[in-house]
Image (spheres, one colour):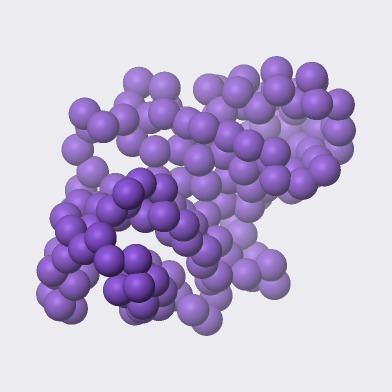
Amino acid sequence: MKVRILVSLKPSVLDPQGQVVKNALHTLGYQTVKDVRQGKIFEIELENTDRQVVEKLVPEMADKVLANPIIENFTWEIIEG
Amino acid sequence: MKVRILVSLKPSVLDPQGQVVKNALHTLGYQTVKDVRQGKIFEIELENTDRQVVEKLVPEMADKVLANPIIENFTWEIIEG
C-alpha cells in the first residue's frame, strides 16, 4: 500500500521559504501571485495492506517523525492499493 | 484562486532525505515501511481567477521556479475557487 502525507506550516506560522518563492515569481513577472506557502510531501510504501492498521500507523508516524505538531499540520491519503 | 503544486523527484533519482526518514521510521519500530520518497508542495494564491489563464501560468511557473525539470516531476490541481 502506498500513502501520501502532506505536511504544511500552520497558517499562523511565518513561511520565509514561501516568501522567497513569491518574490522570485514576482521578479519574473507573475504579479498575479498573492501568496505562496511551501510544505513537504512524503510518499511512503508500506508492506502492510490492512487498512485499519495503516489508518492507525500513518498519523502516528506523521506525529513522531514527519511533522512537527507545534508548527505544522498534516493530511494524508492512500494513493495506491 | 488557489492552486497546489506537488513536486517530486523522478523515480530514477536517488532520494537521500527519504532514506534518512525511512531509517528513522525503522529505528522507531515501523518495519512495515518499504520506501519513503520526499517532495515539496507549493500552495499558491492567485489574483487571477480565469481558469484558462491559470492553466497556462501554473505549469510555466512550475517549470521555471518551483521544480527542476531535469530531476523532478510536478503535478498540480486547483484547490479553491
